[in-house]
Picture 1 (cartoon, rainbow, N blue to C red):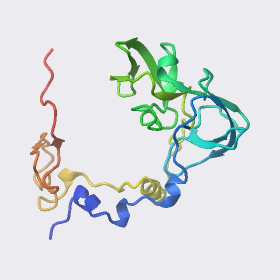
Picture 2: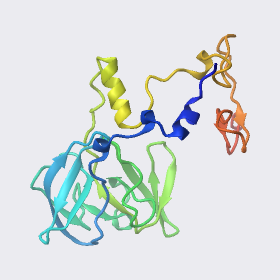
Picture 3: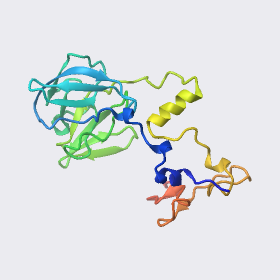
Picture 4: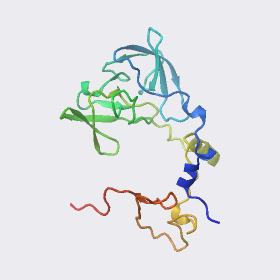
Length: 232
């Protein structure tokens, strides 16, 4: 009897693919205030994030959580609209060449891009009312100038450099991120268990799944914008 492939099992919603509540104790984002000063009162190590999270509070007692910048410390003052490392400001107010992280995709969405530990990107240029940023994927992406960002480099660099010595430790690390581990290669499976599986060796060819294919067949290239080698 064949097995369900990974995306079929994920769609079922079993415990394997559920994240523990402890993995996301807080939800990092940005405050609704567009100006003011906040003081870092605590640094939190979140299981579901590679970068530490800073808990900040202003004089009125308003709280918000954000990913900590490198070398951020408890007691440090963060300015909304400032230009120092760890400050939060609009991307349109920054100069070209500035290092930033935790970028909003749309204004006031709390940050969607560049949120992993030790990561940052550089502002390349401003053109046509948009700000162009060189992303970690080497591609350039344009943002609304009202999108907020955090200045500097995200803390937590080197967190994953330490080797994982036990398989059980790796299992629980991946489980906290709602990811299945260990993963079996599709071409190493039997033909009944996966569309790529067979006992005839690893002759891997890129396969394009049909747009209306069921979950058991939707593997390989999913609705690719193009295929084949790029012509120069």
